[in-house]
View 1 (cartoon, rainbow, N blue to C red):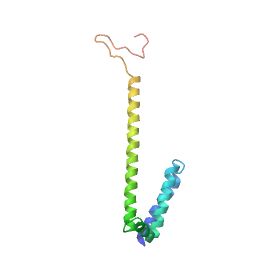
View 2 (view 1 turned 180 degrees about the horizontal axis):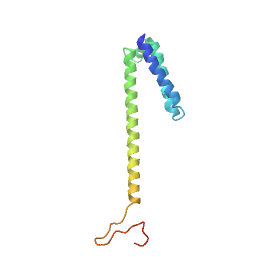
View 3 (view 1 turned 90 degrees about the vertical axis):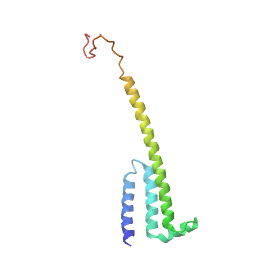
Length: 121
């Protein structure tokens, strides 16, 4: 009973966070709300997760939930990796463009450096 209350409080916090993030990312918020609602259902009706697990050929409901959690975590991790990789490629391209835009011709030996702010030189 204590575990159910603690898990319910944690899941309710995630549900509130999902609703708060709806304006920024509706798809993620709806998906998080759906998963959180399913989690609350299985916290309070654990025998239903066992029935569902037996239906798909897994012995216990907690094992099914753990397997699903691991798969979802791997998908999220892969998605984050791909997004970070894309961001790094964009930053690299931007840095190259800035470097090329600010490039200066090399100065010949013996010639004084020109001051770009001074129109006389």
